[in-house]
Image (cartoon, rainbow, N blue to C red; front, side):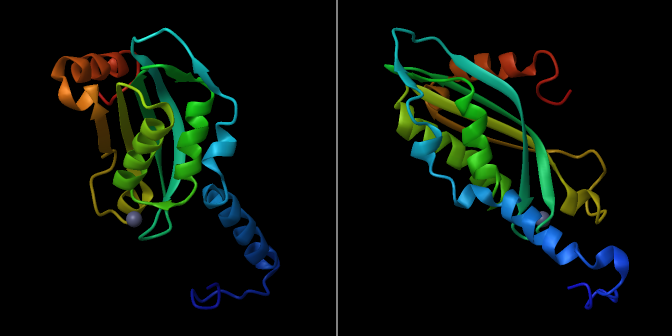
Length: 179
Ligand SMILES: [Zn+2]
């Protein structure tokens, strides 16, 4: 690749670059190796709680599968338990498992939602992701500062507009969704 770009791979600064790039990509795509059951092991609890649980402003970094360039931003997750809840710190881990793969933002959003839906079997799950894509920004395809927003709504969040509205309102307050 370096040679194709017109570089001299033997140049001092580039000598270790292939090794470093390989290591970086292995980490950035380590989600393929992750086992979701292992990530969630023993983090499910049975509770008598049926109000909305929200974890918002989860930072995530992913790679677009079309250009292998980063897209990154915030992820907001909510669910309404039926019998089980999950340790709150596990939700960002679930986001990472799917973000650390070659992705498109739409699929990433859906995978997080369907995984939580399967594991928790809640009354509903909502995931909203807002991200900037370097393949858009660096190549000047789109206006700077443009963000892509995707959402996946399941169960009560899909069926009940007032539940969805409550979630959207809660993630908007204090630095949530873009102004
Ligand atoms: Zn791209």
